[in-house]
Length: 223
Image 1 (cartoon, rainbow, N blue to C red):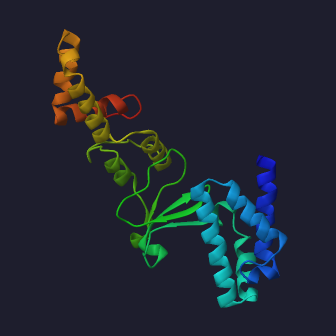
Image 2: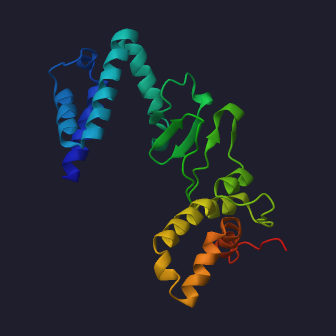
Image 3: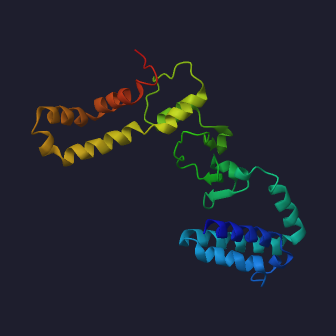
């Protein structure tokens, strides 16, 4: 199945180079292969493929095959991880107005109303309007750590990795608090359970203690 999909995907690439691809619905092999690939894909991916093929057809008709062909040839000189643009910024007008993630699957652009999840590999988001990457301190804030939290003299790359491996302290606190409220009767039935319930119920104190528990083994906390 994987081998067949790769063959169909290769034929789809051939469609992009096909002169007959200038006309939507042209009865050529690559176009039919593209349609078959769409039919075999999950609904969300089939919709994604259809929109991309239609967009390519429209651009080729509007701009002309020569111009689009030169553009496509240039794009294919890029590293594979830079050939795909995942536009998730709705009606945002410019790429630099977005938050940009450099992912193995391509460039992902989102509106700056939220930031993508931090991950442990080198995918530090770029804040487009500021023309810079997310700073280590901003990454720490996203994970709920206070500004007086020290990462010591370690390299920024290690800090980003730790932030990507971590979980937002406030989210952990809220989830734990909800579980404790749900199982309150069980917790209050034992001495240890009462201690846990009292700790988690004090949200501010619990958040700080959870922060210490999560990070004290890897990063020295300030005294």
